[in-house]
Length: 288
Image (cartoon, rainbow, N blue to C red):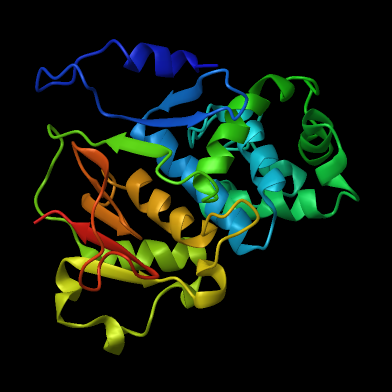
């Protein structure tokens, strides 16, 4: 299923005349021999989706919870952090200050609004076994309780990529037309900490001399081990988060294990060498 915006983006030119417009694409095999699933979204939508996923996993929520959260945000705002809505609803989840979700300013922070959604979801006994639309409705108390169900396939595809279960499933094409000077590795570090918490990075002293243009995110040995499907999810979660931020934070290269993503080129396999590839470290480089 493609969102309407995704279909629109697919046929547009960017201002440089390229027919490969600024966008993000999640693509993965469906595992049943029926071809690939594909979802397209804008760069801003990808940033919001990655934030929702990161907040959930940082809280220790399972992939199912992330799927529920993403489906909810797809229905409520189309993954856009909007400052308007029905009555006093605002933000990704269209939460209402008058209903105790927080101030409008707080709700407009995607990290805060995601945390509040997961707080509500965690209070629902057995939410992971409920139909998605039932779990979402118990948090949201929407006037359209069945509306979340139609977003489940797209949300599940996004969650599989953003939680790290589907390596290299997310690819983004940043806009060259909006490039505005070099990137700032300090901003990347600050955003990593804001979304994933202080423990995501080594101390500043350990960052090394290349800190001006690169960020090395260690993947702890325990989380670097392959999960249930043989995939080291934590590393791929961080790598996909960085790709989603490629335009917002001027990131032009991301590496993990033996894979490298570069802006305008996508993912490729690269033989492990040095300390940037083939190790339990996600390497992030900003444009210079």
